[in-house]
Image (cartoon, rainbow, N blue to C red; front, side, top):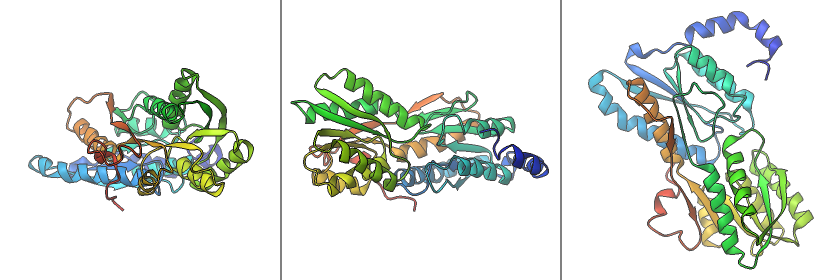
Length: 334
């Protein structure tokens, strides 16, 4: 990106940009801390759970902040598609124009989102990054899963599901998404340590929706369907797209599919053993901890630069275990 709006648009919009910069200053003097939460997308169950966690944090914090004359006003907006970097930049700029005190951001791209966050930092707006890393050192904290460890869990699951070994596929998500790229890296490194697993495809990207993922999965199955024994899909839309493609090809009971992130549909698929396993984060806690960390920073409290969130592997065998219950879908914020 040459600029947030492109070089030509930046010149044309310069007077508006100056006005936006002057408006883009924290407004905590009015008694509310305005905290904007910007997810990667708006439709997937993962982001609905993040939203619920962020709301929960605000509701829990406001009674404790009342004696200080403060409260959290939570703002929520993300791009419609998880590949629309330009819209995510515009959402951040829009929140800045409204006047915010802190930003909690799940960046779509580790590089493309660095510039708007850097500009926000120059204006005194603190940013807590959640879910996926950002290539900018001026953020307050990074709240996220150990995604490389999650990818390794998926490889271990496939190795257990295929005791005699087999050919496996990694269907990647999309370029620039640091969280899924870390999962893919952890998976590939674990596969390299597992002689029984033979990787036959790892260079295809699914895109940001279940429809694009299904088309990519169909292409792979048309090519390798009679040879593949296992698949890793590193996020919700890729898991869903691959699961649908396997069903259409009549391969659901033949190919072991390990996905990432939990939805009600995946719970049902685990019950029917259409999924061999799902690596599950805690998006609710991610949203909650993101907002809590932003508030602690605004209060002047020290915060850790890296705050981990939990991860586990859910299989048909442990789906109803009490230890897994906290990782299953909660009611969303809508």
